[in-house]
Length: 223
Length: 189
Image (cartoon, rainbow over the protein chains, first blue to last red):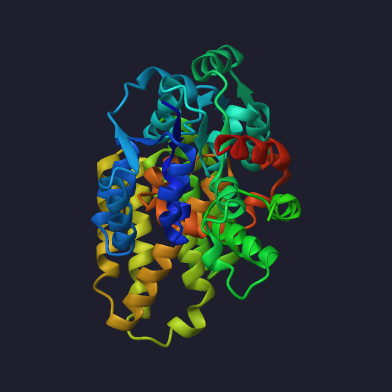
């Protein structure tokens, strides 16, 4: 069975832009399972349900989970991986804890299920998987200190995550747009304007995509 | 908390108290920035609390012209000075529980302020928390870890960072748009 694993950040971007309703149609086109680990469900539903501010979003996500659109997978034992990841970078002889359990569980689930891709809007995880040296440079530049990278642990991490492919909610919604799943947003608007609105909506609610990347996506979007 | 961290926090507290007495909001901001770098590396609870607190105080003092006319302003300033002195004293004596209690009491006292001033001040503290969280995220720590450290919602943090320029930093770009979109398109053939 083909799978796509989502982390907390990508689903937050979708729900806060009222784009969750696109997911069932996308899943049908995908012809496989959309998965999240239990810890991600807790972050998306249980925690915000306890507050007033994002209670509605929690209920909306819960609805999508209850209809089976997202398959919730049991928690994985990620202590080993968590320990590796949070000891890769050090400053002033102290390891920097860069990721939390739910983020690690999601990537571990993607590996376990041999998923075709991992949907993550959060920047740190993406950098760690795709360009760990760049993440080291960000840490060093922003913390104004020398960062040491433990290459042995980095190799171990890479070995554990294999070659996970990462996409963001922006690429997912671009495909949805190209497939006509967002046509109801376009009534009375130019298509370029519509994709611009969708991508900027996602960016402004937290998807880590640059203005330059948005402009590039708009240029190559098929419609 | 190791000795170096403790000494650093005491120094920051001492300089904060002095800046408050001098009504120097710029120094308060600089001190908050200094403490947030340490907080990102150490991720130590006390350092984070202090970074948020100092930033909030800098904001409050920036607006003191409007706030000082409100009932309760004077007692807020006195409580501020006393509260931070007590917290510093507790750290000097390695009484970490006492430090926590002093900060807790300080926050509790804010709740006793006159209604209008209290609303403003508590709002400043809430904003300070999310602002400092966004700085930690900017430093390279993930959304999840940052939210966990500052006890803020992931939803709120994403909404806040989305409106900053953090994503425009060149180092954040990894794969080309063309290649990433190719992966996405390949999933739905």
